[in-house]
Length: 206
Image (cartoon, rainbow, N blue to C red):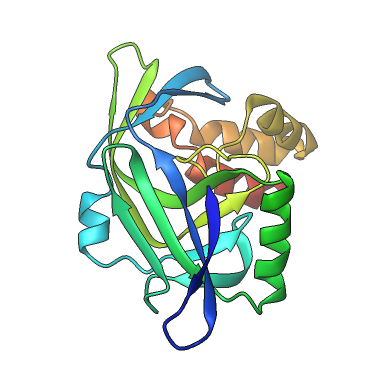
């Protein structure tokens, strides 16, 4: 990641952010309540969503005020041989940008992540590797983060201990209802995409 002050052509200045929100063809380890597996975002996964003009904000830690946006032209995304390249023109007078600049210059923040939906995926025959072949970035985000969240989940995947904690907090009747919904057991491909299960678990725990 890099921040650079530039002349905006009108006598003022802008802060140019550049970095990669995702690196393709680079395996990383994932874990959910079914166990550990490897995940890879394949080259070309961003082609369709970028061509469709996805509306994507640039934010910090996947939330807060939008600092740049593809819709306004202040954020530009492109997929190259490395991954999802991010270029954002930030307002140097914004206190949020000043805070981000300070954190980056101090080395306190130096990672990126992004939020998206998986629209196409493939699993290895033994279900130990998930290849994400296409994603949808529309109304997701690209984000500077304290610690890089896994790019396929943006915080949506729950580890087994999180699931156990929620299950233990449920009344017996609701726990039985949840377990009944898993019969017959879902395919590993469906189960590994835990955004759905996360929503169900949270709903059941209310």
